[in-house]
Image 1 (spheres, rainbow, N blue to C red):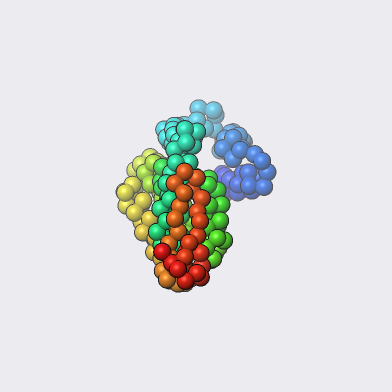
Image 2: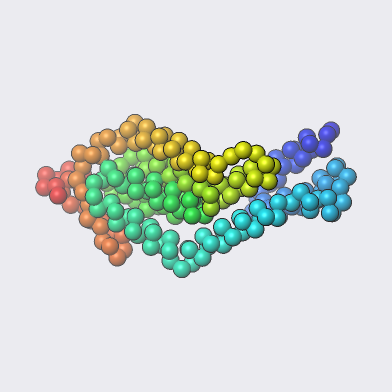
Length: 229
């Protein structure tokens, strides 16, 4: 079996183990690299380290550390509450606020699962309160996370752009980001129309408590009262 095929199979095993077990994928892959390098590729330690993208590693650590600071100092909490306050307008804008919020979080460095974990509970609570399709709200959150996922300072964007630069391949950081943003925006627009978003435009508005992000429905915004705002 060729070293290339062995490397691919070991990589698959690493993904399976890290997905099904509580094991850090990076640490597991690092150990696997030494195993494959010494036993299959006949490399010494210097040869294995030569293939390690140290500059990309530093970028990823910096981006994730920056997002951790943003969470610790309350920046992401402020962002969540500020975005929630925006839904005091039309109910039809609620899914788009959640789309934009998850997009901003991933664009500034959050991994997609973390951004979805932050926004999804808020989004689904609004979906329940105002009779919005949970499927619509969930897809808007997910595609919002993917829309910002390839910004130049995001996790995925840093990985892709780092590899492209290291391999001297043609590419554009802004082009990659805009391609992902536009593609997910178009998909979200279709889903919004198909999953009941058009009906939400006829609904009323909801005032939002600026301090807590809690909402109280009034008029048509509550889903059927005649005295809408």
